[in-house]
Length: 370
Image (cartoon, rainbow, N blue to C red; front, side, top):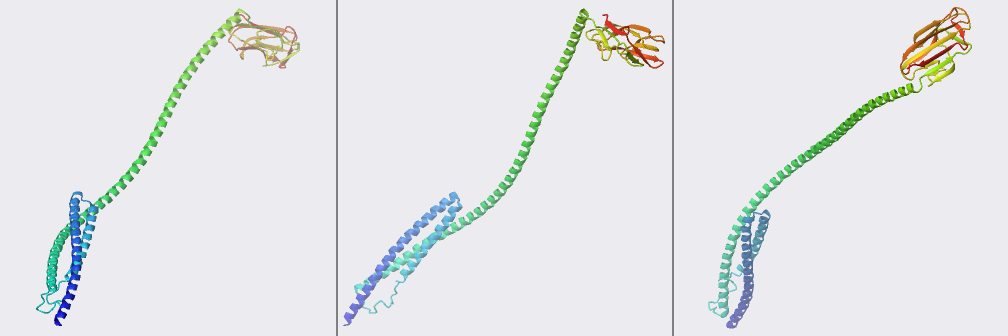
């Protein structure tokens, strides 16, 4: 009966040990995979650390720090798995081990082997985790140092960027100021160029006007010379063809007053229309020597003094006796210029300052001699 009980207990222990052995083997395989993954991650982290020494990239340092954190997380999971395995660290005095000294059955032998493998696995896994933790600690320190250097560099870069931004803003402000000054200078240059063009045009106009004025002066001079030549030709032609001459007489009852022109309104002869019967004045058309004569016959009582006047100057005088129906005459030679005028005027009349003349014997005549 006791033998059967022991046999049943051995079978139960064997089943328990087999079940736990399967679980330990699964955990062992899982731990091996985790250790392999952790070693791979450490190798990659070391490679990235080497690349970081070359590139000195802040972003790469941050990525490496993140990667180290991931390794630590996987290592923590591995430790938990190891703690799970340590739960199978059966002591020799465990309640599940049979207390009989004669426990030499196959189940007891399997339990010893399993227990020895478990201790060996725990020792190996502990050593591996220590190695991994050492590598990871060194990697973490190096990463922290790199990260601190990267943060310092990043801070320095930010400061430099801020200084660069300030300098760029200052340069932009200076450029804007220079641009404004440049625009002002360009406007001044444009104004000066326009002023220069205007001055050049004015100079050209002045030069042109001066030339035109000189040409006009020269043309005027030539015109004057031409007029003189024409005048000389006209004078020569007049001298050769027709000389100026006129004969005019007063009406039968012409009233004369002292100091006024005596009118000879009846024109008998007037070559070249040199005598104007309205004003009773002769006007020379060409320069030359002229002869003038006047004859006066009085119709009423009184003393009459008559004068031939040249441009307002009396050049010849004659007078009638104090009485009625008397006659007087005078003549003169004058050197006249073109446009000179000659007429007859009453110098004085006594006693009444008024007298009547007329008849065919009261006349005024003149002609050009040369």
